[in-house]
Length: 275
Image 1 (cartoon, rainbow, N blue to C red):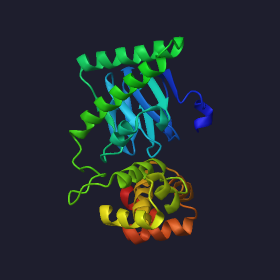
Image 2 (image 1 turned 90 degrees about the vertical axis):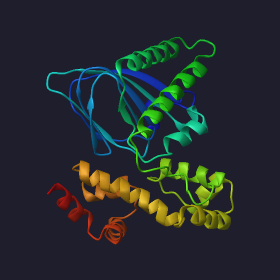
Image 3 (image 1 turned 135 degrees about the vertical axis):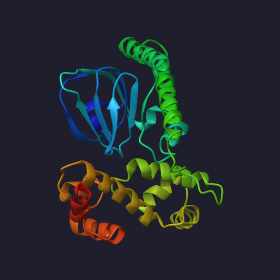
Image 4 (image 1 turned 180 degrees about the vertical axis):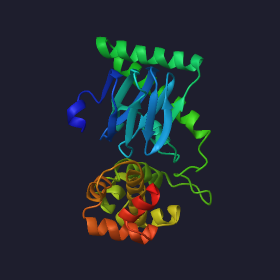
């Protein structure tokens, strides 16, 4: 939770972690970007595996979950930067949600050394808090996000989820989609998202359907069900826990929506996937 790690006056923190045991599946209210300095292991981001080693960077939004498994006898050393969305510019936030991809990438040695220097600079600026330190930290953090986004976009073949090729994306709808991809596990209302986009409820609904091809409620439910599927495939959480973690109010509603979309119950989906 944000209140356990961040404050109103400090929407950013940096840590140097040494990991010698498994970090079980979890997720956060805040954003997290980490860079591995040394050690080896395995990282699972939304169920997708990638080796942990020097040069790996990964980014999590509040809509993601992950697990870290060090190799036997290994100690993983990494920089861990956590921040709220208000700490970075909206254009960078929008970039994060632009494509459906898992943000983790292993950079080659030369680039890894550059990133490590960026992390060292952030660490030093965080410790001394001189004039302009927050701007230095913000700039370095945004460069890391942009580098990771560029690297991951080259392997993503799912396209731009915030773009409809048949027409230009309305700026207000784009803003709404970014907001939804960040907050879909909360109890989002149509009125709240319309207000965030700066449009009236009726006009927002009309524009949203035109731009995405589906209604606001169906789009929101799709985000929640995709998150639930990842948890079913990758964790041992109960159906009830997954229901509430994904943003559904009740298990019956969750199971009805799930069966309507995937033609099976959550339990059957998990069983079929395991086998």
